[in-house]
Length: 515
Image 1 (tube, rainbow, N blue to C red):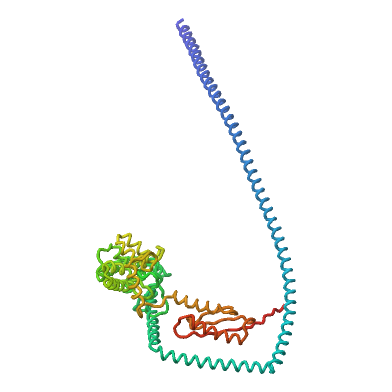
Image 2 (image 1 turned 90 degrees about the vertical axis):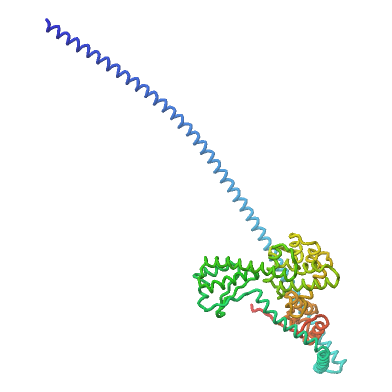
């Protein structure tokens, strides 16, 4: 009985355990099923949202594609329209060009017909003139009772007699003039010699020569692939000329300060022997400082010697720059100091203020040393500079009006007179290039004023004038007479040193074309 009850209890426990396990499994499966349903519903929602987004993007893509297609179509239509317009313009231009060519061709044909008619008319006129000339010669021969050859001989004889008489008269006049003006001619010859000597000053004011101890240094100055000479020219702003001149290098520049800096730097580089771009830059800086010191010292020297005090340091520096400037071959610092002393002497004689006259004379050419980017006459520039640094009004007017660009005062007149005396004394200046060119132009203009002269050229520095005449208007006899008249006109009109040779050229050209 106990065994039965134990067995029943076991069976009941197994049944209860199986029921509990079934219930727990059912509950677990039901939870998993709910989770699966929820996940399925969530996936469905996401899928639906994704489908909606895909449809939205598809609509946007379709709209963008339509817009792009419309834009491309519009651009293509605009380009095609521009192409059509350009083709139409090109077609119109071609049509206009064809019409112009047709008009030009018709004009050429008309001109050719006119030329042919003109040539025919000229031929007829020439035949008539030849016949009239022959008739005239026959009439002249009849009236003069001599042949053409006899008339030519008589005319040549008269011309030869006139030429001999004219030559003898000219020789007598020259000898008489030499006897009367031998002293004046001597002075002119001396002045010409002085001018020839002062031409060297011009070359010195534009170039400087740096001596070299040997020819090998030229290669070192040039450097590998020219880097040294390029560095030197870039640092100083000058042209360094290395040619076949033995043991020397030429430094060329119109700015004398830059040329002096380059000369000093190159001299030091040659003496030192170390020549490379970094060293070049260092030496150029030192040379520039030394030149600036020289300029300041020169300005102080001019102020001290002229006894003009109280000037602004910048005005003193500008005065020092005059040491490196030349005016018509005359050193500007010496010229300014000379004008200052002359102005003081003139002011003392006239009873005016000596200090004001001396200051105006010393500073009258200060406008010439101002930088080249300032435009205008140097007298007006100088006046503006002095006004900027607070100089007295009498000095400012004396400087700005010494060439009479503005209303002058007594000190500007004194400065102008002293300037003329300093520059006009014998040997002070070379002849101005502008005056030389004007003399040549006047000579050519005088020769071209004669009728029948086609072209004329002044050659050999104005010592000869050559006139080319029109052969159909001037014959050989008229050319001889033209040479005489031109020489006479030059003697009566122009002033010139020495003598001028007059040459009249008459040339006849026969031109024909082989077709």
